[in-house]
Length: 239
Image 1 (tube, helix red, strand yellow):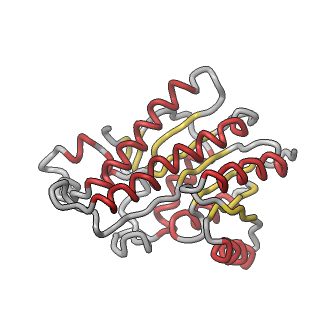
Image 2: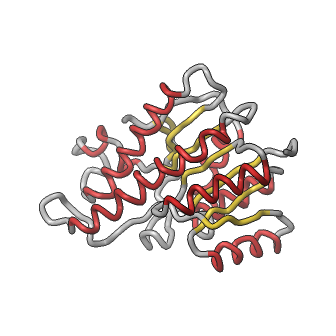
């Protein structure tokens, strides 16, 4: 075990996840890129190395229990603990949509990845987080997961009806709320963080770059006394 803080970012081989990894590596943390595609993960490690930043990769598919268990075991053997977990891995499916027309298979796939997969990774990593002096969990959520904003006709998110994706992020927010209670009295803090409207391979549209979208999640991974909240670049988001 070293004195350097260790952080795992899931789905960090591209997009916001890669930029979060870049910022945290630049801040001096030992970054682990968790990805299901080993070649892309290595490419991300090489990309960071090209900027003089050190990172390592671990095979991790949030929909595969064996890879999750193996990633947790590898992290424990190599580092002894985990200081920060950034649950970034997620998908969007264009067959998703309003509840009367959305593809059920698409909704199921989105929920399995964005919520159940994240829950599985969190459960596997919690024993390692408990070994840290001050552990942190950052759940990458979305303003589309806010029930308040989904139900507000004046909200810019009101018309974005993707029952699978929105529900998966609302469920992720529930994970944040319940984890805060489970972890009460420990040194682990957990928050939901929406990066903002970022253009990535996930959707193909947005107004922010991945680098801009990585700023707030990276800040929560590094510092802050907030615990059990839901935040976006403009401030706290209503549940």
